[in-house]
Image (cartoon, rainbow, N blue to C red):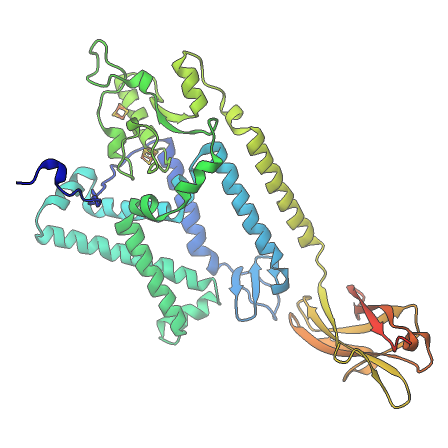
Length: 472
Ligand code: SF4
Ligand code: SF4
């Protein structure tokens, strides 16, 4: 006989399916609005047109990988301007720090794609199978015609959502109407079909089946966020000093919690917030809506479950009122994050408006640093990469300024004028020459500025470089 102490304990706990109940309230309404806004923007954005002239694509939001360009309405980011993308990522990170330190896991509860798509999948599930009790009953009943029909319908709708999600993603990388035609006629690139297939499958599985397990077991964010929260961070908690001992209403000695389980039944993570703050809680606020509804029904004050900070808990237990929300939101930590976030944002906006419509890179040819021509002239060669961001083909004049008497020649160009097609980069070979006995020919190095000016005089840029002489 095996003694209970020696029986092996499994470290694996089977998943208990979660069937969140429908709930109405302020947080649920806010979440519906955010869901509509975010999913609407995601699905619609690739179809918005934006006229940039004949030489550029007319898709408002486009990651043009083939031409290494990113378009966002009137903004066009070139590969050498990647610092804009880096700046936006820094702003996104600082924004996440700011919101987490002020109001806990608001990202998880309201904006994370896992939360948003899971919400959508649950909405479809509820529409097909009914609310919590009906879904529980269907889950437990054997596979009969009704269960087969409802499951098939639900999975088909989930699959279509997944397909729309994967489809929308690939439209961000090329002209959406053209790609749609190619996809429908089987002429799109295999990568497009593969990407759609992978994203359809992940959306279907992650949003439909894995749901809360992704947040609890797969996502690192719940573990990291604790470093950004402190005792003044607002998060969702249960006022046990008011609710306990829980039990029947109107029984002497009982607290306000009537143990109706409404807060547990609506929770998409399947947890009981009355057990205290938990890693699984994504602070979606639905338990607040459920409990407030119940408090209204039994005529008790709202916010038995609500947003509060640890400092509020201490104060309320001591019979003092909680601090105002603003005192929690405006703290040195959040002010610092806001200042940093604003500084990066302002720097990006300034950089955006100070960009020139033409842009050059100058690379001196250093092998050899100079050549001596048959008449003793010293020649240096340079490669100029000239980007024309003006939206139409333009002529550009290349010139130099220096303290020395140098002569400039542009290879295969009359009068040192080159034509650069719209939104293209041209590689140009430029030569600077110093007469045999000139100071620049004998000097080791002479500072030079190379200039590129638009023939219409609308734009002019320069680049400092050096002319290498014999150095005698
Ligand atoms: S406990 Fe409340 S706030 Fe936390 S996940 Fe569940 S319903 Fe959302
Ligand atoms: S909804 Fe409110 S009253 Fe009902 S069990 Fe939860 S905390 Fe108690």
